[in-house]
Image (cartoon, rainbow, N blue to C red; front, side, top):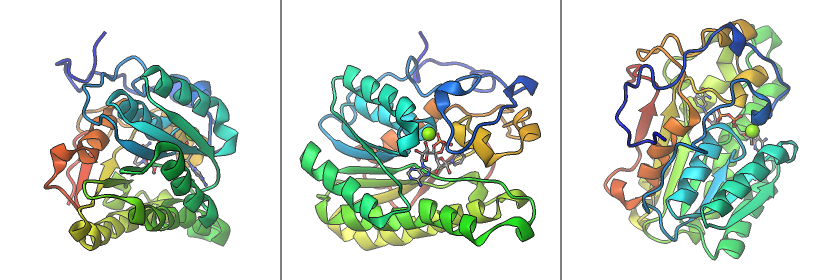
Length: 298
Ligand code: NAD
Ligand code: MG
């Protein structure tokens, strides 16, 4: 079985989208109902002990990129607190099992990141159940396309900012007092921060805010020995995209416009998070690592 160390042609490593990729779910979407099911590394990510004994929180850990990150962290030797929405329990339980099969502790903490108290509870649970916290991977996010600003409601604008930006503020604020020197925070931006789609006005704006928030926070906590970095994915095949993230007709060509000519799979994002979480990246902070199929970024 090929893993992330097998040399192969990245342009054909995973399939291109096609008409059969058109599908629709209600947000937040359930990954196991997608066709094709995204590759989050269940069979294809091999750990090599890069995070042994570390204690991590991963948000959005049930599906997509967060699920790939949770699997990778566990296989690299970390115990993981998993955040997700209660309606995603079926996907989350699969991740709990995968983390346990890697020989690590999984603590499931379902809840709504738009709620500051839940964000605090998430951190407190990690500190209590794992005995500390030294990796925080904020991966959760909400994306709902709206074609015309006239139809973009204040409720949606607010929910997108609460989920994507306020939750980072709340979780980081709660987490930092518990983090020892050597701890790391990894936030999740997007190619949308630099090349915004007209139909993702609110979402793209939050992703730009996440880059700036992370640079400012990195400067603030450097003297505490804590590093803050960002991963900015390009088009990756996840429930976010099929549950209101993109119009149906765009899913058939999803990822085609990238230089590599295909969508990414969540497992291809995981090594970026592992690198930024581990001391291998000890001199890297305030950085955004773009994993987007080759699209140039500023
Ligand atoms: P995904 O749907 O698998 O993951 C998003 C997760 O966010 C959900 O599983 C859910 O658990 C969580 N979430 C959403 N709203 C929440 C709330 N109110 N409370 C708690 N949890 C909530 O999709 P994904 O594409 O893997 O998304 C992960 C991250 O990657 C997001 O930040 C997204 O913006 C970013 N991203 C994705 C792409 C892409 O093409 N898929 C591209 C760039 C950036
Ligand atoms: Mg999900």
